[in-house]
Amino acid sequence: MSVDSAVDITNQGSDIDNRKNGFVRYVFFSCALVTILTTLGIILVLVQGSAEFFAEVSIVEYLTGTNWSPVIRPHSYGVLPLIWGTLLITVGSAIIAIPVGTLTAIYLSEYASPRVRRTIKPTLEILAGVPTIVYGFFALSFITPLLQGVFPQTGTFNAAAGAIVVGIMIIPMVSSLSEDAMSAVPDDLRNAAYGLGATKFEVSTTVVVPASLSGVIASYILALSRAIGETMAVTLAAGMHPQITFDPLEPIQTMTAYMVQIGISDVSVDSIGYKSLFAVGMTLFVMTLSMNLFSMWIKSRYREEYQ
Amino acid sequence: MSTDTARSPFTDESGQIERKRQIGRLFVAICFASTLVGIVALIALIADVIYESWGWVTWEFLTYPPSQSIENYLPGGRGAGIYPALIGSIFLIALTAVFTIFLGVGAAVYLEEYAPESRLKSFIEANIANLAGVPSIVYGLLGLAIFVRAMQLGSSLIAGALTLTLLILPIVIVSTQEALRAVPDSQRQAAYGVGATQWQVTRDVVLPRALPGIMTGTILSLSRAIGETAPILMIGAATSMFIAPDGLTSPFSAMPMMIFEWATLPQAGFQHVAAAGIVVLLTILLLMNAIAIFIRNKYDPRS
Image 1 (tube, rainbow over the protein chains, first blue to last red):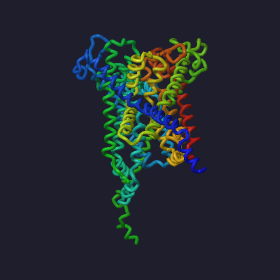
Image 2 (image 1 turned 180 degrees about the vertical axis):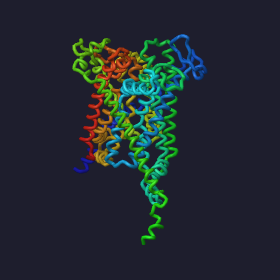
Image 3 (image 1 turned 90 degrees about the horizontal axis):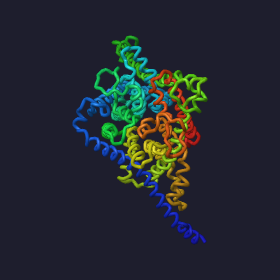
Image 4 (image 1 turned 60 degrees about the vertical axis):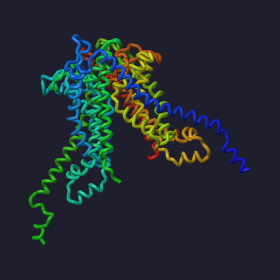
């Protein structure tokens, strides 16, 4: 009896079950394959669109020209004003988010009680969950009027307002990721420094921050990469005026804002405007991808290992 | 004894320790002030939106199509609002949810339960990490070239949903993987021990246990998708639609597109309409997050 049932169990329905198991495995594998296809799709689409664009426009003019006017005559295809606009927003937002985010991370990791940390960290992360279109509105209806109160020459659309809201938006990226890195520093290091007579300030700045530097720097790069790819807030706040200017109170245009401009206009598929979308998209993709890879590399290369 | 204390190393003869204390206090104050910057910005943002929208979020606003003239939004006007975009967003997210749950859970189950530790697995995972960092507008270009043009779906609801699915897929996969990883291995071994196949273990043991975690992660990702403007703008979602979409292939508008349209209209008063739209969008976001947190707290094995 017991021998019989043992034989029964191993054979019962196993053929169908095994075939089903094999089939399901392929279904799940195809789902995972979608992510690879997405990457290939992005690269293919960008390369093909850019190739069509560069068949008509010289790549040297694109990369070195200082005037961008692909739709309005006289045509000119220098992408530098768009890159300049993007960099202005990125540097401006870094000036806000990096000090504020780092000091917030130090406060949360070294000074705040666990209860305070548990409240403040998720509260700050709400900032990262607010849709970017809302930041655009906030810039137009609050930040720009505020700037106009201080500097009357501020335009309705200006780079500063865009940089400020993008800076606010990426604070939680810097603070949360840096806090994670700082909290991972073992207490032994802190206690050793206290034992030598260091104050809490000295422990924070000369022990914890250097020990967590790879994670902190990686969070900066990731946040800046987000700032480069940010679209709706800068479109609404900073305007659609591609120019190379040092004055943050003037309107500019970022790469992403240009793409929106073409996106909402009715350009035909054959037009140079449509093709330029992919060239600009490619430029944006290469910039953000290399920053993301760089961030990952720093994090793994310079990680301090503690047991 | 008392003379000794004067030479004790613990006395602060030169005032050095006191100075260090002051630096320490100043530093805490600066760190705390920085923490407040983010919180104050969040409060200012919410206050600004509520202030600008005060009195503009009415029943008519939720149930009427948009209008070009501001009078129609005012009390006593013909009635105008966000209705087609609200319905468009709900359809868009429902459709995205269907695609995302299928693909995201499938991919995560493959990576966690089926895939052997191999170069292929780590390649797929590294690729997912990279995809999460691709700007959303680039996904818009992908959707435009593949779904709208190549597959000829046009600027339809389904093209929008597919684009948003690819956008949030990396986040859904990673959060689902975490949920699957939290299922104790002993439970899998117990099921294998009674002769279950891998699929039976996954279907009857792992997935039911991981379900709350999967739901939480998916809802949070969908709440990100509902606020996305750039990708659906690139695939050609309408800025103003006067009727709600009625099928998979019908053109659509969505709340973020509508808000973008209102925020750029030069006519005075439209910033209040845009703010009212933002209140509706944020309310839905808040609801989705509340549901996700509720599920997490109710089914969290640690609580």
